[in-house]
Image 1 (cartoon, rainbow, N blue to C red):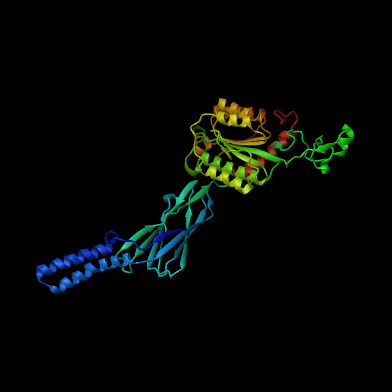
Image 2 (cartoon, helix red, strand yellow):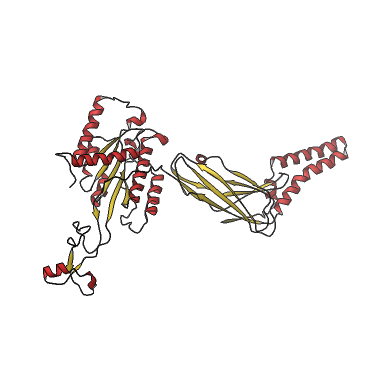
Length: 445
């Protein structure tokens, strides 16, 4: 909570704070005084002095006001989905021993959130407070500063007005829209940590336990008697931490790969899809990271086991709130990041691809478990491809679909207006159909 001093000093400050009404009174008073000398009317001089003196008296009154106020701001919520409203709560405390006069509050907000909110507070008793609130809304993702809060001191006649600003400000994060997704059976590769780094560690069952030889200091309660009898020496169970599923959400941010502008563009649909899939996987217990074609990873360290799903979801949404187009022309950096560590489920949301880029995307499947790709038909976002488009374009798209499916991807062709939950549900059905199809190519290994 910041404080502002209500005791401004300097008569020049008071003169600069005169309102249009106050300046008009002074001008009228000076005019009346001049006319009194020209026409020899003494009563007119008295009127002029009264008119000119009233604003000066009001300025002196405001300058002599002695009180201190503190202001604070609270956002509900701090992260608001695009297109939804957030409420900003303001509180002003009078921390002096004298009551305040007329106060006017104005909070500084970006124009995309709406007009500047203004409030008038009559009188705040000593040690008292007042609370007001207003709503903001934005259809565009981003981080928007709120504040600083400005306090205007005014006399009862509106002749003089002085402005004081608080020092603190807050930030409202407008995140992409997140659609709830249905649970489906698409699991990536499970990996654990502990004494054994083998991927053959069983998930359950006494017979599948991986033992090791007894070491001095081991807890005797970990002795595995079947293995001890089999090998003729004391064997103990390995310490394995609970296994966690890993997942990577790949977002294609290439400017050349997307069409359209504003909230209705293919890029905004892709960002919303990445947010929906990422949060869904975190809620399902996946250790999830966001990866872009530029090689950016969120979180930067893949060992995020200490973070709760809500904290990880917050990091992911904050990164997507400020996601922008990249000038890259391929997926090489993402391929490098996945080569260094791409175990588990891979979900890619990509825009328009050429043959080389499609081949690079197919290679990304090699080091992952299950893989799903939302292949955006970006021409449908710009209206360039209505139903029944050019044959050569359809042939190229079909060739890319065939290449990705043969590489083991579950491909979801996506057009403008498609629903993310419906596509995600179809990914489950298509994966199951591919798993049961005879002679299936590109099976997961």
